[in-house]
Image 1 (tube, rainbow, N blue to C red):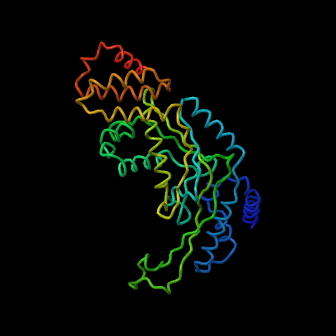
Image 2: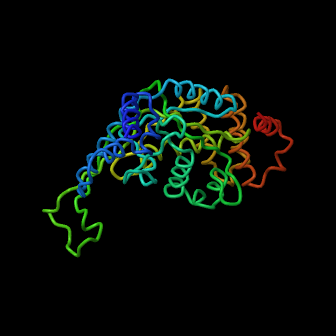
Image 3: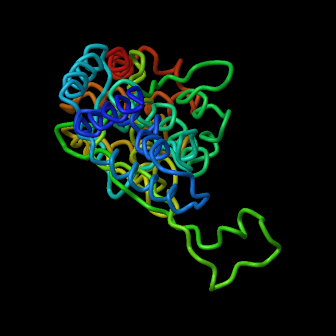
Length: 342
């Protein structure tokens, strides 16, 4: 008797400590339901269990982000910047539900940080989203196992150039776990308890679950001299997060995030115009027109990365026309090659 009373006292103490609890641990152990089952007779009715689930979801949504996590987030960001990863904020535009179908004490689940119990987006989910978006919406070279797709995302034989890190919740921007509900309108039909077809008089069954809001730190990295691949993947990921969404229930509008994109580099507009002019040069006019465009490039005051990109396009044009040997000793071509080294 004393042991049972002590157990109840301990659990009541845990309830009072809810604001500093680990949401993942609280959710996984289903404390509220266990306490009630030990102090009440079994009724055989699902109503008590449904109420327990609603209460548990409400309890977990009220757990605040621990101060220790804020320090962890600062260390995480500093470590990413120390290894040269690019970090950008992505803000949820509605609700986020990652790991909804995972194992848990509820019919639904959510991906939480194992140590701190806060929602996060696994790097594997972001990589899968970007790779799938590229395969579905971009050119043939971005199809799975084709050249661009393989270089950026890798395959079972080799790793891609771009590394995706877990996206952690930014504690300074607020957000976290919130209560949510999905409603099953024809429960018996879906569970195949009877051969009856779904009907308007079926009783809807609300299922409580947890979703997340807030801003998340997304980080990508790539080896030296792979800046173009990193830029491409950022653009793909931005479009995928905006149009497709990450996680579950994306068809209902969940998982949409607005990714913070850096301002255009100085001279970006001039570079884009020059690139269009170069790409429009017919192969039979390369000999007369490419030297002029290359000289224009050499005179422009642009970011080295932009100059390198334009130089690569000019070099591709020269090779396409079979004139690389013919211009190898030209001053403009030698200067062009210098841009590729920067």
